[in-house]
Length: 90
Image 1 (cartoon, rainbow, N blue to C red):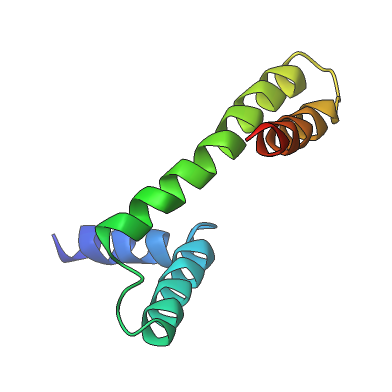
Image 2 (image 1 turned 180 degrees about the vertical axis):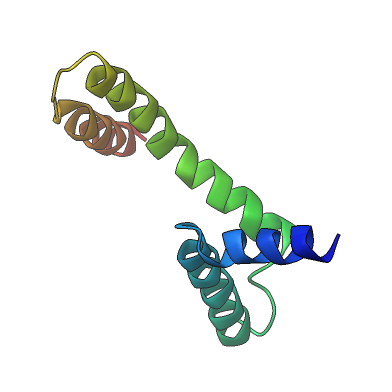
């Protein structure tokens, strides 16, 4: 039982994603300290999810292109142009 636990801990520490998780935790702690604890609020998390939704859709489309063997960087440009065009119309 103890061997299983130590092998699990060793695999987590040696994982490629450990650095990303540590960086994420560090960013959350720093921004929470800078904004007096308002960083982890429901309104801010909703705003972050809304802002990342557009990028997520572009990533999905670009992923399909890369899977099929095409390298096309225009979806990012089209998404940026669409945002600018939408902002100009309001």
